[in-house]
Length: 368
Image (tube, rainbow, N blue to C red; front, side, top):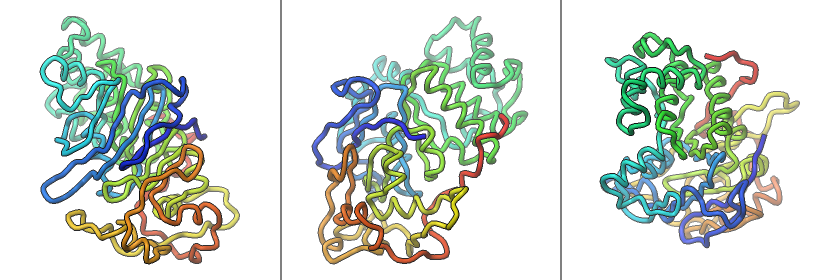
């Protein structure tokens, strides 16, 4: 199920595009422009620009490990220091917030980490972990925190009696639900979902994805869904941005991008996802080697050492992120050729080395 569209931006490209389900002129909830994040000599994020409308709306950040997707999410929450660019939330620049203003932003924007084992204190009962957030932001009086924690657990499909349990007494899927309940406790408008299902088994993954789909509507949430798995974004995200070595390789409406990738890297990631019901296996694009060293990226297009369609221009000229269709952008010199025909592609190989986890058939899986 694909959803609507919003323009994702990158580099020095012009800004604009549809802003989702509201008016085209509506201001975005989250506006990231020319974001740069460095860790020493590593340019982890290199000039990324993104727009996220007010919810319910999902923007997926997809790419291999090291592509910069998690760093973008953490930068949006002021969890890492930025080296350039701006981040605006509801029209206000959040990069310089201090004191009360920063605390208010912490309430409005929350994160659900990849592994709940690392985000939940093993020494605290579940109710205490949720009550801590309620107390810090004065959501309810302290005397009502335990009751409110129980209500939040019920909202995410858990028994309210779990407030008395410790994290080790719960399953992986239950612990992730607790992490989601804690994030929701402060009534955020924005969630960063950092690989929320990667540490779970397939049944638990399906249950968490259904939960996210229900909560986005009930609470009108906007979220960045960080993943390397195309198999989960079509049901949850209107827009997708594909990242490679800290830059946006391609962006566009999720359904269109999945059906007809305009960038060779997107095509490789897409081919790594098995599809049930296909009569003939889809051609796989094998990407040789690993992503380039982020401390010394190659000249020209950073993807050219692994790209089977690279030409001399790709080795010398950096491709701009530019429009290649309605609501679509790609940083590829040959994007129009990729969209127009598949004849330029090499024959099928035995497998793809692009990172991706099989989504499996999860629609009928029971809750975890």
